[in-house]
Amino acid sequence: MINSVGVVRKEAENCNCLQVFFVSGSFKVDSVEAKKKEENFRETLRDMANSKYEYVKSFELEDEVMLPNLMVVRIDGRDFSRFSQVHEFEKPNDETALNLMNSCSAAVLEEFPDIIFAYGYSDEYSFVFKKTSRFYQRRASKILSLVASFFAAVYVTKWKEFFPQRKLLYAPSFSSKVVSCASAEVLQAYLAWRQQDCHANNQYDTCFWMLVKSGKSVSETQEILKDTQKQQKNELLFQKFGINYKTLPELFRQGSCLFKKKVEETVKHDENGNPVKRLRRKAVFVHSENIAGRSFWNEQPSLYNDLGHFTKDIGKIEPDFIRSFQFENKLLPLTWVVVRIDGCHFHRFSDVHEFEKPNDEQALKLMNSCAVAVLEEFEDIHFAYGVSDEYSFVLKKESELYKRQSSKIISAVASFFTSTYVLQWGEFFPHKELKYPPSFDGRAVCYPTYNILLDYLAWRQVDC
Image (tube, rainbow, N blue to C red; front, top):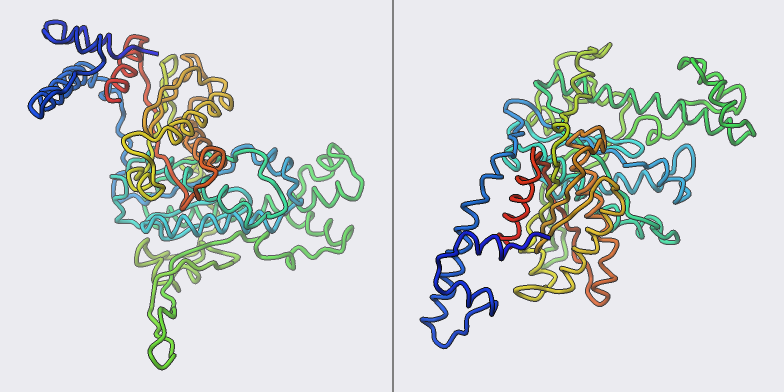
């Protein structure tokens, strides 16, 4: 660990009282005036150190999603094939697991008012922000990490509600990215692409697992399904298993979409016991075989007012559009990558949960335990430093984690840290209920030299 005291001493070596300060660790305060001098001195030292190290902030890259582009945050379960196997999800679809995903997405829409629409299936969800949103100054890394982090926290929080007889064996996590859509037409293509993927994956998985359950090996099943078309899969299901694919639950075939709609709710009862109702915007679930269809979209005022009209129906999706949806920014090779996460609104979180001031030792130990879990989960992270509600994780210089795709690295670390925080809460606060899910935002910064990396760490410790 870098010794911030030594760093500060070099900057302030001409201060007469410095030796006493570093030997004793604090001044003896005999009066209000002396206390004021001590506070001023500490502030001076901090300012001097910050002025030397703040240059490291210049390595942070701007990642604002420029207006008038529409923002979509897509999250995907990280290694959910293993997660579903360990937790014994039903194949090809576990309805309870899907309902848990849907419940988490509803919580996201309630938490972030700028999110107007969501669509998801299996272990993925896409969240669409209103076109005028200035959420987090439209900074992609902050937004994608925050959504993934909050989703992961809610997933762990709600696990017992959906699986009361099944223990959550380890912390789930999600990767996420921001997809920038230049117009309503591009958004329409994106949604059509995701729903087509839902249909193709579900049809294949249904065939695959029915064949496996009938006694076929995995390799035999893969060979049978190789190069089969949509109609051939439908015929296989019907002829071999008596399954009409079109009669399977909409939840499996179509995925789920969620958007805010004005609904009438009873808010209270008058003195005669009659309900008093008000119109409120509430997230509602809808299933549709074509969420990108003009008729579906343009029938919802809350969608076309905040996101734009769909002027025509989509046939074939432009390949260039798909390439843009799949594009990933990569971090510079052979640089030191630091992923820094910060608690979102942790002043309020600490007040609500009655953390001791100025420092709650149990809360800090929980943060440290989560950091240890991150280092164990990600082999390429070799060092971490944290204070209060923030942590910085340093990847080895030659790391190829996620092929250095920044969004995947940031979101995976932030969401895993958050789900671990919720999972371990009871261990550190056995007599204190977690009132609501925490969340963390993140960023990734590349530092070209070891000395600059050290200056970054010194800057964070001085700030501590």
